[in-house]
Image (cartoon, rainbow, N blue to C red; front, side, top):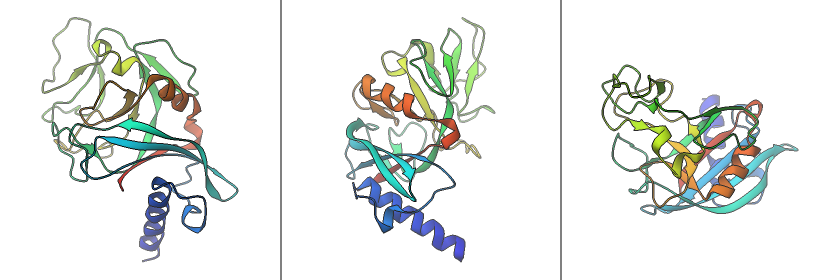
Length: 219
């Protein structure tokens, strides 16, 4: 019962931040020891959202940057995300510590993997490695199919991207894959995107030791 009350308080606090509330009782909660938070909020059915950055300081979440306009999936937000539906999933997720990109490392604080020929994201629900990064020999046929993405070929979107750990632990076949924070180029297939300069600022700000989270929700 106590854990249920704590989780409810955390969700209420994150919702208040997403709506642009100033730090106060609702914002003075803690989510799993995280010290950095990205909030993304939009009206139901919208494909544009408001994105803000927050850091934990003096016992509350304090505003860092934003609101910035972000783009969502072509189907807007969904709490029942499925593979190929074009929706961005709602919820609170970790941001992975390794950043990927076609371009050179922009100066991130965690790991950086510069994409090369043969770097894929497995988006085949029938594959045992569904919703993971995979490398195969350049030019070789992949052991997975579906809508799997040849990451090194997708520009400008994948000049830089961070992985939103949706459907990651455990991975559920068909629940959705390849949910990223990437460079904006119109509406997405389910990711969250920002203009490149703002995305780079966000990526440089993230610290893996701060256990950063992203909260995506409906206003």
